[in-house]
Length: 207
Image (cartoon, rainbow, N blue to C red; front, side, top):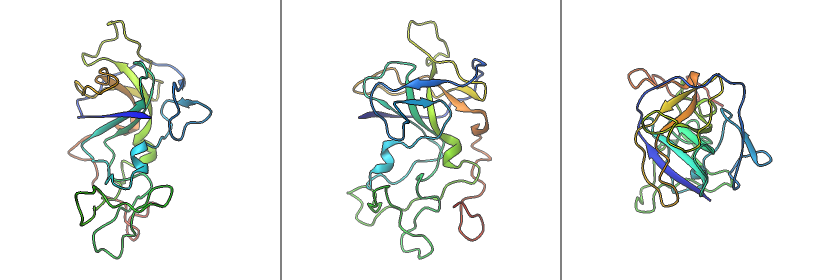
């Protein structure tokens, strides 16, 4: 089981210059290899398995962790990612060009139950494809950008930066999700320039 919390973008800072970082998982998480993950590798949030989940939003950062996992443990981070991982072209209501999105077990994406009309899913952004911005990560600093409060934090590998995500939101199992997380250097987000083009089977193939 995972806990999930939502953050808003705050900025970018530097982090420790190390090699690769491999973290064990306290409980099983989807897509993990042998109970451990490499920070910076692609991951798939459990939300993707729900047909009533529409899609991730470009202006959001989403974190999923093992329930009860301590600070500094591995999390699946969707960093300003738009759409669904398994559906690069999205789906439009009544749009014959867009096949309906589905979960990995074949369930068609319907969106929230309270929306009988179904849910449109935006295509992925060309500059923010899932394998680049939905990755295994870990908490590298607290909400103040510090690591001296007695909690455990991880050092970001050299190809990742420690990115502050704001003050965070308390969850039922862990109130320490707020703070900074390791994010690939190539995933830096600029709201003014991000997603200038989206995946399109005719003009911008993203198979």
